[in-house]
Structures are given as C-alpha cells and as structure tokens.
Image: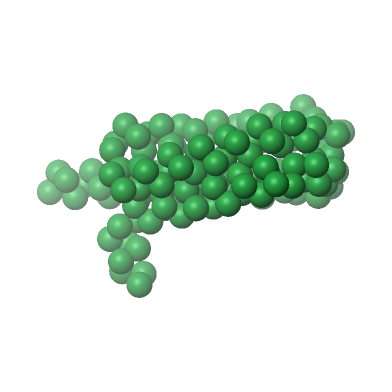
Length: 134
C-alpha cells in the first residue's frame, strides 16, 4: 500500500486534503456556533460559517485536482496552504486574547498539519517533475 502512495504521492495527498477539507467544512457549517464558542470570541459563528464554505470549496478543488493534477493547479494549492499557515500565525499573534486555550491549540495544530500537507504537495510535485524529465 505504501508503495502505491509513494508512486502517486501527489495524487494521494491531493485526494486526502480534499476529503479532510470537505469534511471539516461540513462540520464547520453544521456546528458553527459551537465551534465559535470553543475557539473564542475572536471568531463569530458567521466567521466559522465562512470558513466552512471556503473549506468545502477548497476540498472540492483538491478532489478535482487530484484526478488531473496540473502543475499550475498544484502551485495554487501550495500557495493557498502557505497563506493558511501565515494567516493562522497572524490570528494567533493579533487575536491571542480573543482565543480560548482550546482555540489557540486548534489553530496551531491545524497550521502545523497544513504546513505538513503543503510540504508533501511540494515533494509530490518535485517527484512528478523529475519523473517527467527522465
């Protein structure tokens, strides 16, 4: 199984990111009020709804991209991940007092996970280019 993932790293990462993003987005849409309370006053239920809608669209983009990964499309995904990580850091710095401990931990862990996924996308893209050049 791991050989299959290694051979298709980029495709596997894009599909996994798509599934996780859509699932998280649906959860954010369904439980926006509860999630906002858990994260803290820095995030309103409406902000969580907006994030949920974005995550559903972001996830669908990844699912489509996983089927036909174009270099430009993957670069957009990588740039989006980088912006998410930078935005998370900005929220942690600017709104620290408006976050619960759970909210700060959630944002931090999510940023680390997104950074890891971004690095896997970069590795998969690099592998794909190297195979295409061979």
